[in-house]
Image 1 (cartoon, helix red, strand yellow):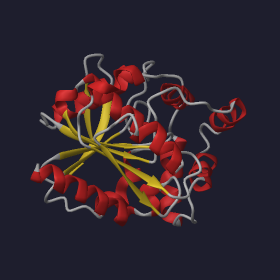
Image 2 (spheres, one colour):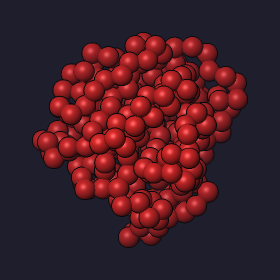
Image 3 (cartoon, rainbow, N blue to C red):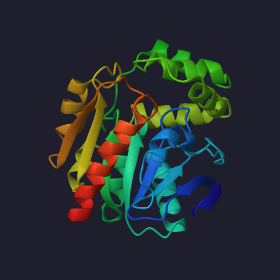
Length: 261
């Protein structure tokens, strides 16, 4: 695991696999870490892509700091891109980080050559029940309880090894980091700035996703991005651990279009 430090000095942990091009930057979901994508990256041909997993502040070895807003997240991603000498990247954002990936493309459109938005997430404010928010945040420090949220939104039982890995990563995330990223996802909007994004985009959804249903994806994510297309897989919300090989195939198909283009 390597550490990159941006202008505010916060250490952001990241890991690189592969030596190909383009550079594919993975951003995990709530209470997660870059290790969430292990099976998906295993299924990729890393001779043709360089996979970079980035841990958000307070997650997976990254230092925690007060800032967990959209500008902080985008700045951290670009800091890692600089550290791996990537002039441009393809952003791979899962769940709430699909929103964060789009924000990186808004902040630095010249550095984002493609977007892979998996199981989320509209760039507008997102209604969320107060009691559910309180329940999720009350699980801070309890890896098994946080991992149970992941299992709840999968459409099939996840392997024990995957659940143990998710629980271990979640247990180390401080409450302030959980709160900051959740608020950055739910309470912000940059819909009025999205027209600057011209990067080719694929939106990947689960047919049985109870959080961001196919209809929500079509209306909230696909419609504002006229250059985007939708790929649906038969699973729930946790696509990278439910169907990693199929997700890798969609990813490689999308990248093949970029290579041809």
